[in-house]
Image (cartoon, rainbow, N blue to C red; front, side, top):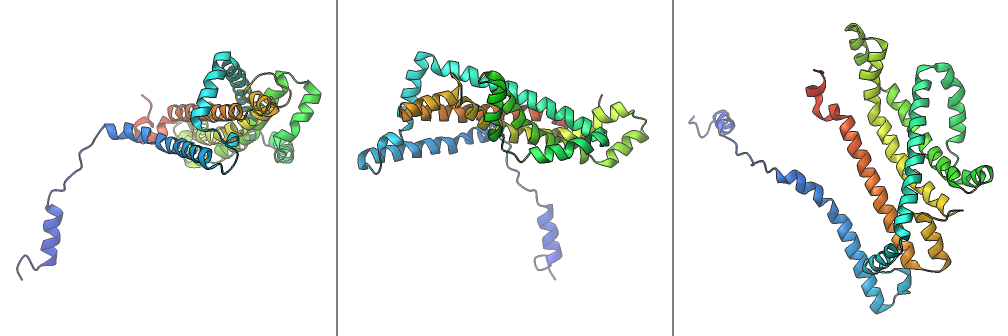
Length: 289
């Protein structure tokens, strides 16, 4: 049997042939990030086309769906008056204060509940009872208790943030691999080092999952709280536009809410990548120098 007809020799020859490698293009990683903007650009382009077509065909009242270009013009006009800047500053302060308070309190309570079983015994049923209650249903109670100032808005955002972060914090603390803890104990690590070097880093990804969920819920609470008894903020712009039937102003506020949430969500993911770099680098950062 010659070499050409021997399947074993043919397979060996194919395996020994040098394989062509695709050249590594450094700009591809950066270009992939910018490609994520394409769906958003396509969405606004489709919106513009639908608005233009409706303006000519008049399938429904064009005022109900203004074009993105008209929204930009209205947003620029509002920016000249200073309303957008004041509203963005007010909403940003509220969401930051409420989100950070709820996040820190949830992580602290989760650590205590994970460490002390008696604390978990008393608090877990209470949180299970209050957790399913929509936070927006508590807003009228907070307004009656604390008035219509800034405090009830921040409290509502903090409570909305608290429950999801607490749940994910407990889940992250309980899902730590016990082999890692035993390995650290066998190497003579103290309880403090086990907590700071093993348990807490392992729970950070779960904490950030809860933070991402709470961020969206916090923005919902923010807008609703600003629609009830506020004199500034993105929610206030929506209510004021509703009272005077200014649809363009409504869409300006809605677009700004989406942009601000997207920015906060991106910053949160960026912070997560900074803190859990070990998850990406693996063994390279497993041993501290």
